[in-house]
Length: 271
Image (cartoon, rainbow, N blue to C red; front, side, top):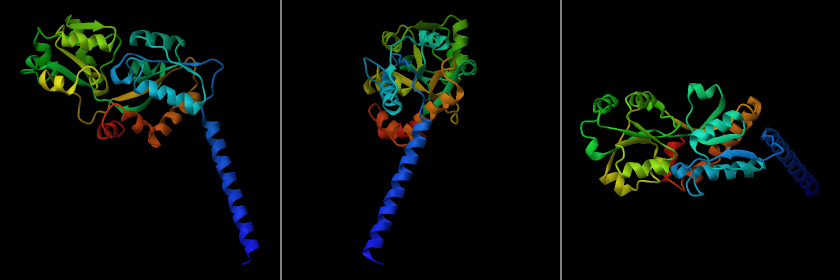
């Protein structure tokens, strides 16, 4: 085979490669979410390592969404209760680190991206003989702290029983919740590692508190991306989900998580 023929074959292969690359890029662009004329409003909540004092996983994800989609974003910080009101009204487009419920699923689009098992964090001296939700309910001197409008997954029924008994103290945000827990204004809270780890250090957890997991072992609670149905069609919502899942597949989510937890913990959250 002459050098001229070999050169022509190489040129053809390179041209084919460029064509395939351009076609792949075109397909990817076609699947990207459509950017509205205005900035997308993604509400953040003060929520431990998800977001606190200007930094956190949710802020990192919002920045990544903006970079990948080329859409403009606004990220106001709102109380959790107000976030749900604003997103239902369509004044907020999306939020992160939310738990899905049957009622919420009728109003919003939900897409999971990491596991988040909810644990009971209780003062050690109050944890004596507390092995179940029923044990906690039977001790009328035990109180639970909770963030308004937060959902507690598998434990929600237990929390509602305590509410009827007047044994839940509601607060506006997570920072206040853990400050009051430390001050012993109540005996226990329910949270995930990415939240309580921002307020209680390892020494505090070892010396003062006990964690209890009352959820079934095979139950997977997820932190989820939420989009309002008022502003996103199902097709458009799925495009945001595709962008999110691409972040999981290409290792971006693992890299972002490792800013806040160990690699082993991050990998477990993404199983």
